Length: 403
Image 1 (cartoon, rainbow, N blue to C red):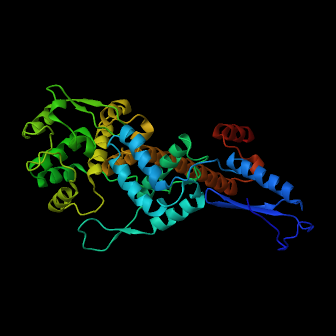
Image 2: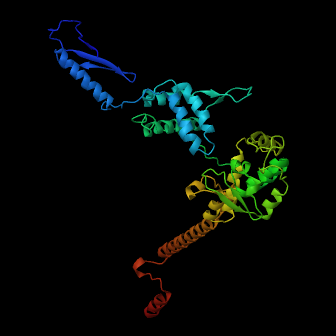
Image 3: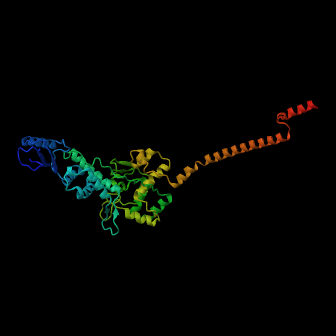
């Protein structure tokens, strides 16, 4: 225990109060006991230590475990068991998080420190392996994925009794606008497929026919392809999806060799392809599609938009795409320019009817104005107004009586 007087006096009979000072779990605590009696000051200090250890000051009595140590426990006991890739992606992200938080004890990581990391991370750059050009800026989506892992780690620390409360719980994700709206036209589809070669042509064609994701197609195995259907097991939401085989799909599959377990496997390694971005980039250049906003996911947008435009119901398209709600399907369905023009032209009849109504009203007002002018003219040449009448028969009868 450490007691001291701020006056610096060591006399037992000094009237100045004793202060206590101690350190627990890397944090310092200091306050006055408001008493000049040393034994009573010791009792007060002991009670304060107990309150800190019991969590009454916002922390609990926890072991001094660093973020790096707990991150390894998280990978072994959670990520490797419950994540689809066995925690490989999570391992990469934690390696970057350890560069910032690895040496810190868990309860030393504050909400403010995480917000600072978000700002610093978003301002950083990254360079791919072998990249010779300028470094790429880090996108908000990348920061959000890393933040999600950090949130999960801190939540597990709370759940497993290593931390009282997660400082990442109140940290908000960055706003991301990643809604792609690019849809290939029918002419662009034909040019792109014609520009592709070999297995990549089959891959692009299947994506345009089925609307499947890139990962679902690349992980497709021959044992999941029967004479009647294709079964996608490696899906984004973890639920398998079955698609019936059509004649067009069968023609594409018949062009692929059944040598390796995977449908799209490298002939050199026998393992499935993992990256096709360069192949797509070269095919787009050959097809003269140079807008720069076409990705492999655009093929999924195009396929689903075509199905909706053909009049198929949302639930039918959802069964093909694997979406669980129409709200998620809306992100992938975009009408083409031709459909927009057609929809806008449905109002042409309305415009025509409004024009005809306006013309009739104009003609009516013109006739009314002409009758009024005629009456004014007759009034000027027909004598006094009260003696005039609009009915010629009445006028003729009056003239006959006068004669």
